[in-house]
Length: 107
Image (cartoon, rainbow, N blue to C red; front, side):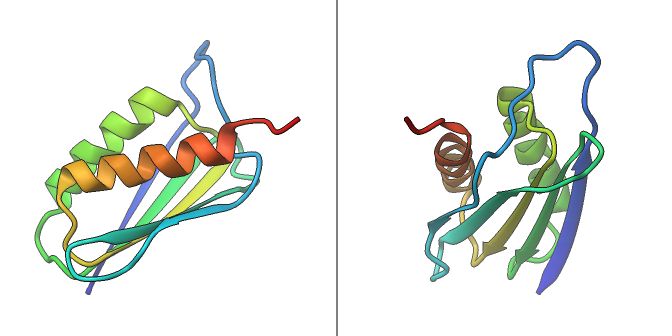
């Protein structure tokens, strides 16, 4: 197992979103992953921890996380990813599912 940590700071003047509630999406199994997203007091930052069985893919994870944060611009949000070899497309899908569920307001 490899653990990767990413932190994104609040960009000046950006329209930001925050997780309003904790959400879990996906299932840890062969070729898949689970994503837990939750609000956290992080001084405006967004922290992502990835635990993966696929070693040596740090640069690819960085690119996927950069792309995700560029789309969502999350702040004061913590994300935990448990990966069992998911492709970058599946990672992006699960991240988007978690962010959508966690940031939408319920009436």
